[in-house]
Length: 176
Image 1 (tube, rainbow, N blue to C red):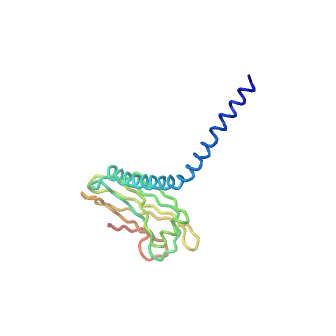
Image 2: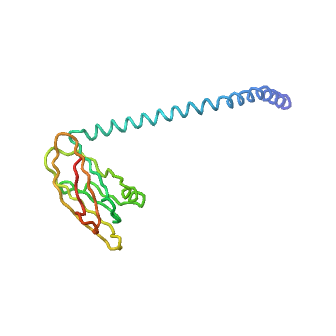
Image 3: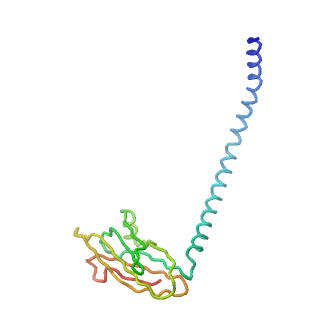
């Protein structure tokens, strides 16, 4: 009886073996097509994610209440920025420690969006504190206070930071 069962099992396996080989060959031929479809789906998913991110930002920060703060370094300054703290109406809203790559990007003229928030129209107090090192290696810290007038549309503010060797104010504000 066991001999018959063993023989039957072997016959069944041999019968399925050619089908498995054909299935393997078909899947090899279709791999390229499947890879292309996967890449298409991936790019569509990335496009949808970008669109959703834009919609989310519009919903979270409507243009009539939006305040965005950007940071840049003064042109030609060798000041090494370590950190920036921003307060709006006395509340800390942003605190950032700079990496080497971020500092290099700022030195090459880059601008960093540091904070986006919803604020009511009217006047708001803005306090900016920066900490860094002068080219000589001494620690440098400065704080500046500003008043922001928020109107109906979005408010974009650039904060330009400079070290102690520059003849201008170390922290200045530009409205965009």
